[in-house]
Image (cartoon, rainbow, N blue to C red; front, side):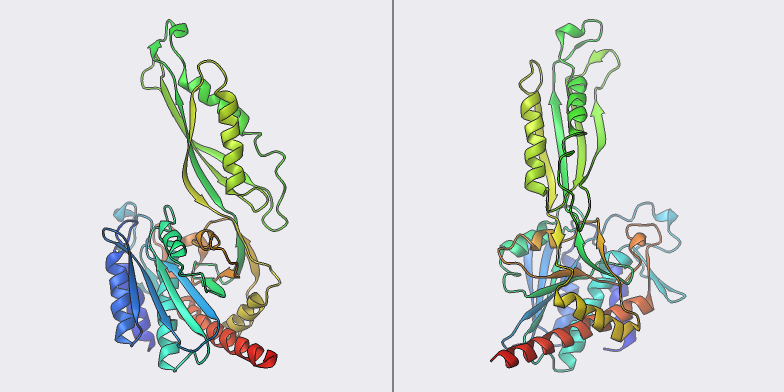
Length: 389
């Protein structure tokens, strides 16, 4: 696969609008591209106009290396603020501009290219390389959850997620727990508040207790303290009326020591306690729940990935943590554990920004790094198996 073809692949992926909810066309395009290079694919329908994708190379027994990326993007925002149209995939001064250029169409395109390059080289001779492309990562992670439930990661031995990592390897990240608390009251004239039930006042009671809800939570030696914030508050419709409804939205960045299940229990216990008070009626709704992910920093796969990336880029990547959630939060729900790392092209802070852009050198280097990781991992595991036989 020549560089011109690799560049056109990324440009085409950016030109296909996959703002969350419309990923099918891109999955179909990737399928056609891979099949043109004699790689079989499967589209796994998720919802109307939405489909996940699975592709795999390698027929021999051995370990499974998974390369995972997501198809969807966030919205482009105000098109007038972009220097170049967000769905043009325009190449300017060695950079490709567009929504998803960093998060994460460059990583996905690099993985597609890596699969093609390995296939053209007659690899792998041992084990398998599996590409998993998912819908809905930017909103609820339902695509990767479905793929997990359907067993597509049950035989995976190691995984690389192609999110932008600014040249680093990320081996752990916080979870994310998004929730809504609704407060129900009784409408009344503001001159006679005793005739009503103030939904806003009752919701403030929750906020006051939530602020101390995690004071005794253990600190993760890897990810640090759990972080929690109330980010949206709405209550009342008219100045001279006691509000009968109010709601808030909050986010918790969870850690293994106080994971999403424990977080939900703590918030629900606050609500249960407050609902014992006369006139208080609060309800908790979970909007999205991404589990924290921690791979042992000493795992051999991390060292192997460092070596492979250094061979391609000339620089050994640092091994760091992240506080953003990924599809890994869904894959760890499978009932077997396997090392997961994040490594992908792009400067992480450019994700979701106006004028999102990726340097071609970064993109092309990542593809070669995926190829080298696959070669080294599958060759090393073959050597290990032969030594132990």
